[in-house]
Image (cartoon, rainbow, N blue to C red; front, side, top):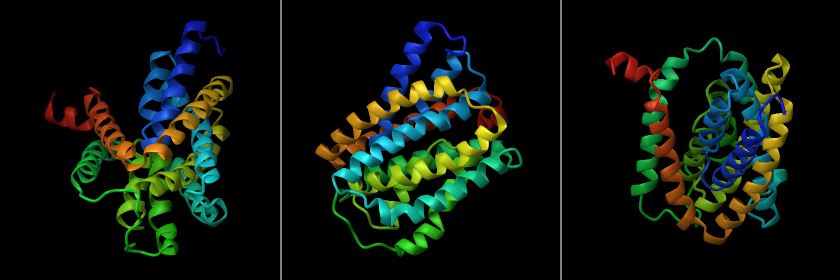
Amino acid sequence: MNDLAFHLVLVLLFASFFAGFVDSIAGGGGLITIPVMLIAGIPPLEALATNKLQSQFGSASATIAYARRGHVNLKSQLPMAGMSLIGGAIGATLASLVPAAWLAAAIPFLLIAIAVFFALKPNLNDIDSHGRITPFVFGLTIVPIVGLYDGIFGPGAGSFYMLGFVLLAGFGMLKATAHTKLINLGSNFGSFLVFAATGAVLWKIGLMMGVGQFLGAQVGSRLAMKNGAKLIKPLLVISCLALALKLIADPSHPVRVWLGF
């Protein structure tokens, strides 16, 4: 498949299943799939583009599972998904114009801050609280902004959506997770359209990994619905910290370069 050895295909399939499982609960699936694709010898641009294709299967799978159990109303959330799609498409188009070093330097620390927030904030459960802004305002501001970031850079977008839903929209953990999947699907699809137009997507690999993502997300979303915040909260904290450490550990990370590490 695209000249990859059979054992690498199996590794990619397993990685996509595990990524779909983790992403359906706490986000951060790209932390698993992108490094594995790079290790398999897929060039960075193709890895990023192909990741946008395969990750949609996981987001769609989780969205379907959550919707079937009534945790998200697809019809009422479609406008938000549309805004995130627009943000993702614009972000992917502007990706070459935005100084990636600025984002790469700041994102790990933002992810650590999110992890600390969810780890230390009391009374984080599956019960909705009072929202600080209306769904209409949330959909016009936070959703396209995070979608824009997802198209430009990407890592941690699901965590940013989660933070917005919990902190600003007043959603409980399970409801926030369910709604994040649909919105993330929108921004992924928007940026994917731009990548597909450039010819950077490896279709056979992306579709094969999409099957793994779909199956993994089915398992993960069912586990999340069974355990709620008791599972989502710790896995979200771990996912944010792992992604932050992964970014900082990269020898080319701007902070390490600036400090001479």
